[in-house]
Length: 396
Image 1 (cartoon, rainbow, N blue to C red):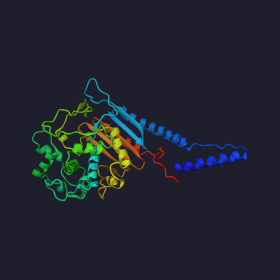
Image 2: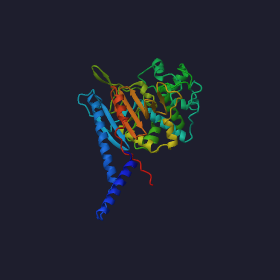
Image 3: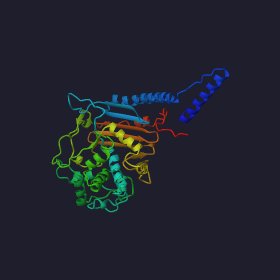
Image 4: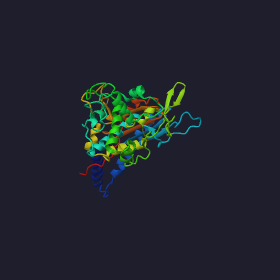
């Protein structure tokens, strides 16, 4: 039942009660508090969605998911739970908490894209600028900011290049080292720019460098000052090895990633490629991610006309029914959802944003165990129970 249908039903009920009173000579008028009715109706639907969430996500936890989940709908947090351990290698384990920060891996890309969009809004760059306007060392022609955002640059993988040419993996490999190596080695392109959607971390690593050079700030500082702090994302940060001369054995964080083997979990060691920012290496919590989602809903960082660019398909042809906007994946199998997966060095994550139904889900884990994707999307896309819209209805 829609809200307008419900209002009509309530009005009919009030009218029937009024005329009934008149017929039998009673003067009292039945007063119905519609706000209470709507509130009670919403409570019932929230309870139903909560039971559905409990069934889906508690089952994932029983099957070994080690992490944190937050699900929200119509501006209400419906389900929020932490399960498992921060460091599975310890004999005396510390339990995970809701406010624990996990590495987002590739889910970092939606934030890098937002940083680029902020600079665009300020007139400091244009999406169709040649990347060499900001990174003149880049030895490739015809690649634009938009190509990087949409993964249509055709550039080769930087990790393969680094594995081949970086002399000492005990030393961090940085964005500037990546650019210098590309200029010196000029690895062959996979294809010419703007031909096909080909997901590749190098695109967002270069965008991280563009943000630095345009803003004249370290990437981690820009992200903190322009996104995290304004939105109250107090537990979010970019892990940086800037200035480090050696790669530490483990990242100095509370929630460690783990590789899962038959013999058990093994704590993932730090990696020389963790020095590259923009494509990964952001840490955040489910609640901070929800704050970011609310900021997108309410246009706190960018006007709607500019923010909408992030959710437009960047390629004219859908590759395997998939496409990519600015930091967000999209699929014809999930027409109302914008989402992203993350997987890097002992962490996995999944973020889903359904703007049509105002639904949001974040799953952060510190193991390489697979997140059950079908069950997750099945829950988010289930419309058998719908919460009343939380936006104010227009006055007649």
